[in-house]
Image (cartoon, rainbow, N blue to C red):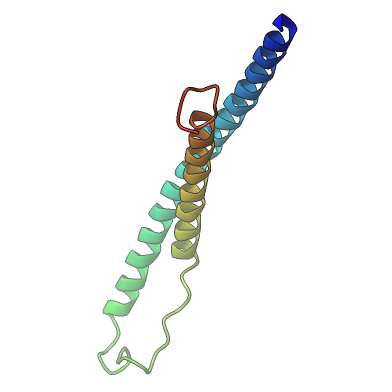
Length: 110
């Protein structure tokens, strides 16, 4: 019986260490994506500012709705994509933590 307890302890410790590694890795990825999202957001703001500046000089007739298609804004798209990746990483961290807390040896529900 004592051997079984030690085995379970080592299994538990191994699981916690793996989870800790995943959490640290996810946190690093989250930080990197957050930094990238901030850069992309700044680039999107700059692109929007330039677009508005260029549009300000045009006549009303040239910018009438339906006559001129808006150009695709790569910076804004990149900012949205980076924000979405950050949300996914955060959700993955929360799911992993919830699974850990609900495990029978944690003392939580389950």
